[in-house]
Image (tube, rainbow, N blue to C red):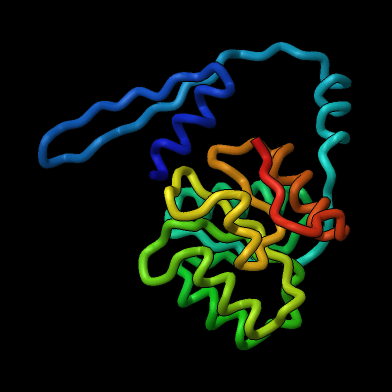
Length: 183
């Protein structure tokens, strides 16, 4: 799943991923992006249009690479991020300090506990916690069905920095009464 998300992000930026494998030695993935020559004023203008914040986010995904990338992106947006690589670990951290989290962003498909199962548990601890559910593919859950779990927003992977930034602000600012899908 993680590699397909990377491929989607790279393709969305008109880039290419190559792989070289050697039996017994491993694989090397190389990512190429097209060179962009833009005026720094244009880049600053684009960057300013992305909503930012300062809240504390519990970020849950079983893919280490996505945890690292997501943590970096969210911190660049100004958020304090507590990353967890599985639902049980996230639930334990939340139970210990539920009042210290402003938002939870969780993947749906993870070992031990799905994102919707995690959402049910988190809401039983703190009914007002806003949750954003992310998935690359799921026959079991979609934007409509996620409402039943108390989920405030639903994102399909891969998503852009702008999509996650806007979704976070919309949910934290209370502009979401039910699960909304971005895509």
